[in-house]
Length: 238
Ligand code: SAH
Image 1 (tube, helix red, strand yellow):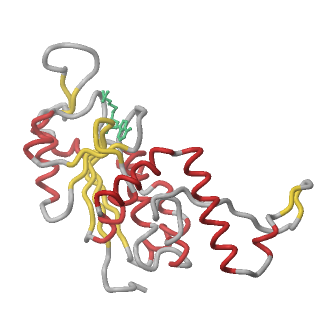
Image 2 (cartoon, rainbow, N blue to C red):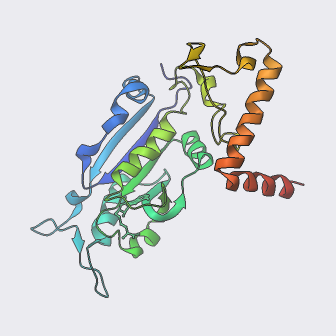
Image 3 (cartoon, rainbow, N blue to C red):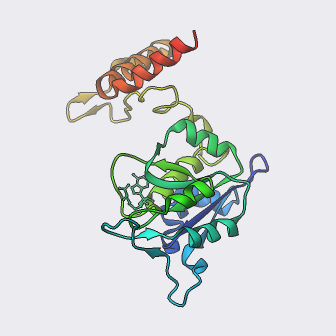
């Protein structure tokens, strides 16, 4: 079942294609892939090295530790994929990934993701191929592959028809700029703790109000930066 006739195409450039599709081959994303709602192919960057040793990295200009991915090899791999889709480079120096960017990506035809390794990639290929640097957080991974899997996980789960219940994607943390309210399910009493009475009252107006208040409280406690961002947004909108 392809819900709106669209199929999202992901291409990942990596030195470790065996890391894909990883967890995305299981559960909802795996089934969506089987149904043809999205596809994932990998390009082995090393296939675009031209020397006898198939060298992909070299020592950093200016000296220092580690190695740098060569721009010529990576550019050939990128050109092999062709144009037409956004090209991301996973990078701790990139713009932090947001649900807003995830939504934009999911609305498109697909994405090309370059996974860095070593100390990173030569700056000139980032510029020459207009790579959009994207970070998944302020910590350092050993390679871009897990970061690419995270970006794709976030995108694929909101493609039309991928989640069992499409509505469940609408009321989540970040979708309205807030963290989500807490969840409860049976049993009614767990180790002496009861489900908040309002949630079993059947009064949907009161339930909505409670959830909104809890979301605000949680966001104020844990992520005051999100509230500050919302405040700036509403001021700038007049
Ligand atoms: N020397 C670099 C880190 C290189 S880590 C620096 O200090 O900025 C090797 C590769 O892992 C990177 O090229 C990138 O592709 C990936 N990576 C590491 N941390 C990441 C993060 N937080 N977000 C996205 N990609 C990351």
